[in-house]
Amino acid sequence: MKSFYAWDGDTLVLNVLGTPGAKRDTIGKPKGNQLKISVTAHPVAGKATDYMVRFLAKEFGVTTKDIEVVFGRMNINKQLRIKAPKTLPRSIAKHTN
Image (cartoon, rainbow, N blue to C red; front, side):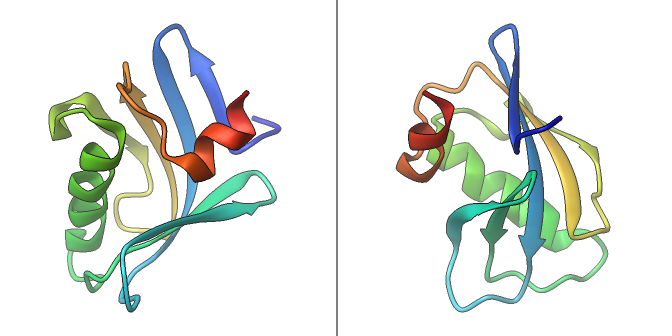
């Protein structure tokens, strides 16, 4: 992917640069072909990724089962597939128009 996102039908594919142990949960700005996402959870046995999925499910108006971690569950570099997002957070929407 040349961008941090791509559409595969109604599924949004996101390349993510995750930051665990942050002060707050935020969806940041794109950095190259990745979107920076920070979460407060600490990186212990994939728990920060699980927490990120729960955070993003709320942001996109989907269930956690609608988000697939394609790769990077135990790494800061991840790819996520979000099935039929109901809403796009502002920081993403302005780049996907």
